[in-house]
Image (cartoon, rainbow, N blue to C red; front, side):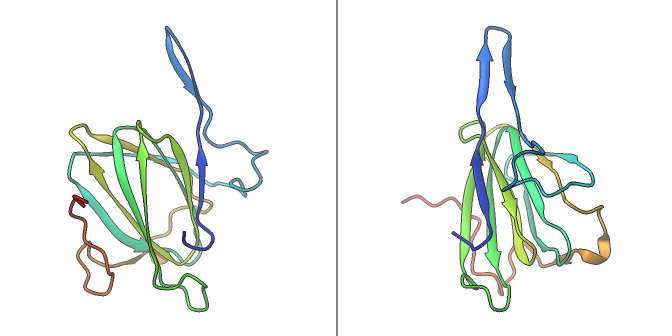
Length: 150
């Protein structure tokens, strides 16, 4: 596990009408520091959105529909987990909230046959000057997005 990454299971309260699921609460001190905005992203099966990191912004992701393989790569100088890669499968089959620390590359791929919805609660307003990008197949990031058949 990459230092500073947090994963919280989410509970669906279900009945014959459907379900209700709390995501982000101000009294959840481990996750909630503040957030400035939220947005939702629709992603078609097989789509990869990667790589980027921020030097000012933390992200909190929830995937309420579909499945994604979220991948993180630690490039922070002085981090005890520098150079480590972490995968988090999240969505309808694993309802979790993922907190991504500053300075960690992150991206995701929609897996399965259904589109995914990803909700982000960043702690800063979006600032394009704080987004450091690399291509999804960057040779500098030791990760292959293919399905692992092991």
